[in-house]
Image (cartoon, rainbow, N blue to C red; front, side):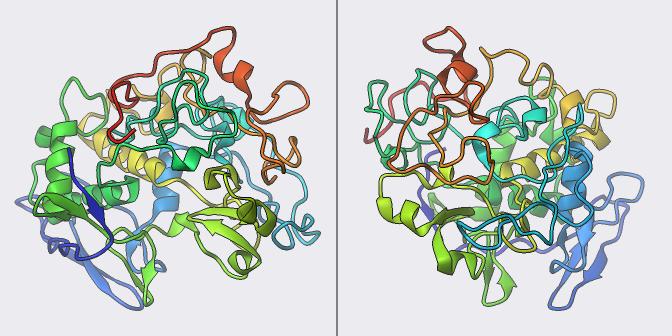
Length: 393
């Protein structure tokens, strides 16, 4: 698709209707709004909802089905007392031990995305087959595997965040809300229209295109709001688990979306915000989950109802998860930078900025060797990795 994007003037979501011809809508109420959800009947189940989150989907529950986590500390995930501070002594000061086949309940950085779950990360959008990622190819350049397409011969100190992107108009937040709205509308024969034998347990790309345009298309553009509360009410793409812009953390530091940088890092300039950790102070420390994971979990939850023998409920058992992170030539992570503590997942980027991370036994963060082995490049799966000419580059 070739559309612009805007945070203004979105078309309102369609009103909810029964999910099947024989079912009747049910209404779920929260403290500030009500929504209709399909009753499912003998066809499809209701999406689990969180009555304490404006009646929105219970993303924690949905994610736990697809990406089950190992045990979290009883008193909550480790956290810092403040931005750039020390570990809070009132909470666990040790990270929960990894368990095979499960994922990290205390998640602070995208550094380990695409790698073995025991290292603490989750699958990347490339792994979950998010069709609008158009990630940069893997040629050992800064920003490889991210949405920023830096030149293959880019200098090590290039500002990755300023390298061009493929602009498609709809991010994972927008797409997950599209799927939620369409599923709840009752206007679609979900199992027969959304899936086929060629797309595994993901919704067909052409169908997803249609749905995105249906719910967020305005003329020849895709328009949507940021995934936050606006005047205390969920936006069109609201997603609680972003945990962006929390106070006082963002008063004490520089926040870039869900990434929390300290002031010195933010003021240094030239450092891509994604290298900073997710929320790591306060009650939500470690609880961030990327919206592409919520989308993948929701897709699989639906596909499991339509094709239970082909689409197991756990992502690692699904077609997309087959062989995940088992071959360095196929891993989809991003070469990291030097951090101020290369053994701490809550670490901040080191100053002065240094790319790549050295990797090895003295760092938990991936360097070139961890992601490439002895290869100079590796091929990413199309269309999730984009190998063509980037417009405006």
